[in-house]
Each structure stands twice: as structure tokens, then as C-alpha cells.
Image 1 (cartoon, helix red, strand yellow):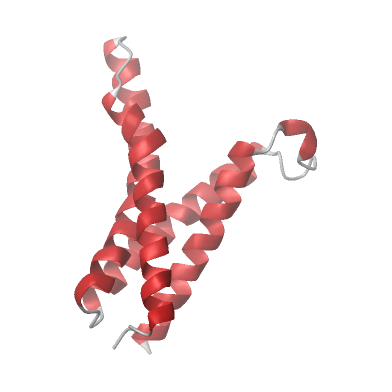
Image 2 (cartoon, helix red, strand yellow):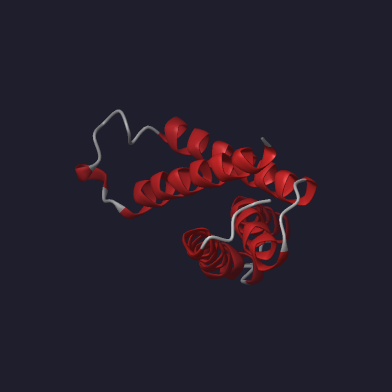
Length: 133
């Protein structure tokens, strides 16, 4: 049962990632008015964080082996790290009145690339037949 739950959470996380990235990347006039509401974006971001935490927890608790476990952990950690880096960047910049580049670079480059590497690696291993035990 838990193995199927890991896959359900993984695919939900990938779906929410696509929604969040498309809301960021698509220009305002192309998005319908009801989708451009900021509350929906922040709700999707909150679901993204929650699913990342759940994926991390389930991956650790479930008997996932080898490289699949590493890819799932990378996917979950990147999902959690993205909004945390954004918040830390804004917090440090606001508190110290400086432009802080480390958390900004983590949020813009490292976490999305890590998420994509983890997700693609997990999907490739699933296609090859290395399922959760």
C-alpha cells in the first residue's frame, strides 16, 4: 500500500510543479482572470511544499531501494527547498538591507534543476521496471 502511495504523491507533486511553473512562466494576459488570482498561486505553492514533505517522509519510511530512493529524496527536497529558499532570501534581504544572492540562486536555479533531475530519474527508473518494493 505504501509503495502505491509514494507513486501517487510523486505524480501529484509533478503535476503541481507543472501548474506552479506554468503560472510563473505564462504571461498575464494569456492566463484566465480566475487563474491569475494570487491566492491560487500561493495555494498551489503550499500544496507543493506539503507534497514535498510527504514524499520525503514516505520515501524514508517505505522500503525504497538504491538509486530510486536518492531520486525520490532529491525530488522531495527540491520541492521543499524552493519556497524555503525564496522565503529565506526575502527575509535576509529585508532584515539586513542587502541583496542576498545565495538563497536567490538556490531558488532560481538549483532547486528547479534538482527537482527536474529527481523527477526524470524517478520516471526513467519506473519505466525500466525498478518499482518500489
